[in-house]
Image (cartoon, rainbow, N blue to C red):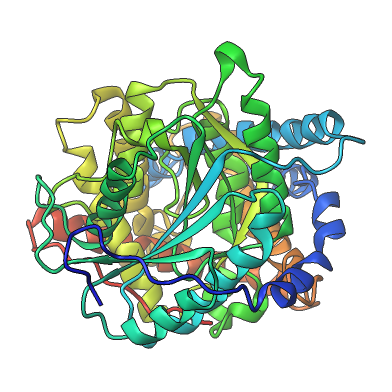
Length: 494
């Protein structure tokens, strides 16, 4: 599949064949997506109930677990407060955007948009890749007529012929083949190696310009009409932003129900769009993405990406987070958040869910101890990683079990002053799963939560906490033991 030179990776163009079907599928939900706003009331109601319950049942004196719980259950308060700030910021940003664009129609952008989709190119990941690529071709040209979709594969990958046939189906798709012999200067591996190759190809072709935007997407994550409009509005606003111009932006990662093959992991992933609305909106939306970014729906100005690249070395597992920290250092105040959504799939099973979270924890821990990164950014990341690592020991079920083992199930804190903080932490957790479930249901073909989903997701929060915390702890321990890092690509439901 690879050409005779490093850059000879394209295939002949052909006519677009499948755009109308995908666009029509998403156009039907556009109106209801436009009406969505994140809600305050689940946060406020759960806070009041938990606060009253805690004061009613909490004893005046702590037991053997008093001091550990005072620290552990209070520790996430900064993340909670950041998320609440993000919730408020999201509501304000959506309201201001709607007012700013009221009656102005849909913008058409003259800047070039290059969608970069690295894929491992296995047969089991191909159906999701095809779904995603078709959505780009169907939806994005409406606002970005100068569109190109770069599908990036390794030379000799398993599904190379199928991917080549997909690329041949549209003049908008280009197949970029990374030669086996290709090595980055710093020896970067895995997905970041492929992304950096595509980056170097754009440099070679003279596309590292202010009027070129790069949209990074995962191979299982598509877009819809709402994504296109939100991105186009963001790009159009930068033309007149002056000193407040932005160079990077991100929206929401959502999970339509019909893409899920495992209902449990779909419910557990309700937390992810809520994180985008809360914590990620607070940091990225305020201009400096110190909380990191996702590897999908990441929009970056090509001239700015050219100054950073993706060559982060052989131990890099979370290149998106590392890119965000470097961007925060070099371009503070230059990131933004938009209300568009991308549409992905939850892991196909609990095992894949654990492998995914373990890799994230492993990679983020490595960044915390990476001295080449700015210290203040690593401090915030270290706080987040520590919150994740101690998650199993914060779990109420684990705490009660330990209490029984030490014959002292008293969970009262050393001081009642932390009770409002405990209640706020728990209320925010409830809000994330409640609102995230609402978001994922809204973007689904059946756009309402089924009657049993809200109570089940609330009852399962302690179990979901273990699903998040155990692989987080395992990933950190693997980093601490200096185990050889691996980038495991999980199965991609179609």
